[in-house]
Amino acid sequence: MPPAYPSKHHTVFVNSTSPQNDSALFSTIPSEIRSIIFTYALASYATVDPNKAYRPDAVYTRPEYTAPHIPDVALLSTCQAVYHESWWRLWENAQHTFWLTALDRSPLTELQTRKQRLLYGDKSAAPRRIQPAQHSDFQQRLRALFISRPEPSTTPSDESSTVDKSPPVELGHARIFPQLYMLEPGNALNQLYKLPHFHPRCITITLRHTDWWFWENDHHLFIRSGFVNKVRLPRSCKVFCMELESLERKKAQIDYVAAQMCDDWQFSRAEDNMPFRADSKDCETTTWEGSSMWHGQRWVRDEVDERPEKLSYYVKTVLSESEYKRPHAAEIHVPTALAQTTRAPNAVAAPGAMGVSTQGDFLNNNELVQALVPAGTPASEARQMVADWKERRRQRYVRETGFRLAHQGPPGGFIPIGDSQANAQSNSPANDHASVQANDGSNDDSDDGTDDETSD
Image (tube, rainbow, N blue to C red; front, side, top):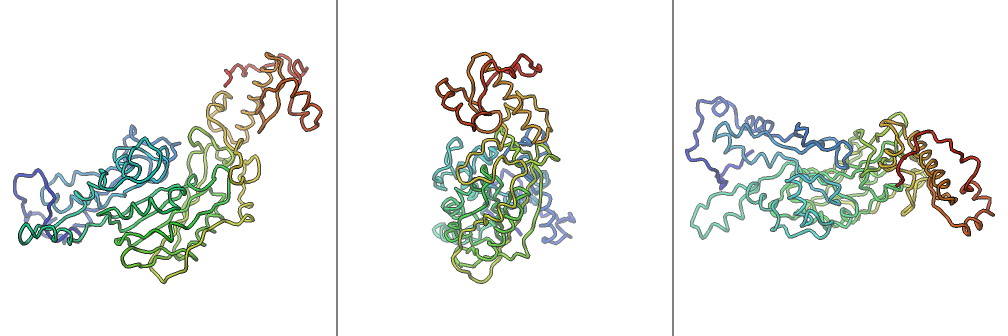
């Protein structure tokens, strides 16, 4: 509902506002119903302009985030009465999105860039200390557009005391996409929550598949709890959600983390210390399918052959409500035994530990192009085609240089070695298949016509 007191919001209107007594919208329909109508009419939606749509393989493309969100403002142009009653809904109804991530993991539209500067100071800089709120465009808009303040009822000298006591206009929904290295310490989240005039009713934190620690190594899921014990939700918050996303095959791990959050974690609200807890029966699950490309790499490890170039995601939403207090929150680690049951279908090796190489778990896009791998090729076939292309390239290198090559890494990965190295390695049975002699009979001129690619 709009504030019941006059607003200081300035417009360019010259004529006075008509009461619209002849309009059924204002004379017959109750203001509560009119509020619902205006809220629906001014809701934001993903633009259908194909020139503004996000790439399907962009790291931030997902359900509800296929293009920048824009509102339809035609309603506000109908008359001043509608405008004065609903101008602020454009900001209240919008889903305000914040990206606590490296900047190449977020869309940098004009509005997003302003919010990034709030968090990072410079859109071209890596994540660092959050800049003071008073220097951000977003903070200025919060003050100018979100807050309807009463006119001073006494003298100008009393205005400052009157302004600070006026009730705020609350935002509907704030959504945060953090990487764990930005979320867990809690500092960035705290600074966001403490912005003056930032009063969201609902807050959602979404952890994407690539936001978890060591996802590249297929490490089991874990999350540290520092932010739970440190961060206080804004006083306006009434609903707090955490969306946990990973691959469909890691469903059991997501369920485990969600269950632990429901059992052990408790968030608190600022000022009144109202505790927020989750109940497992209130958790919701969704699934969706997206591209397996990530920054120019096709992650064949996680594909299933029936759905080439696609990854299936599993999302569980943990909804927190105010309830009794709980002890200090602890870290959550998926047990190793459970992690072993969710192994990738096309993994080269067992799920990796921290820092273990992921070589072979993905195929670089330039290799897919040079190996002439058609779009839609299943992961196992694509990996074999790239390996065959590398082998043809290796054999051609042997013919042209006389070097023999030592095998290193996954199939098709070779490096040249000198004669002294080769002789030292040739005595080892383990290297019988890792090197070949120049002028070997198997390397006759039997090219298949597809090995004329330029070498990397």
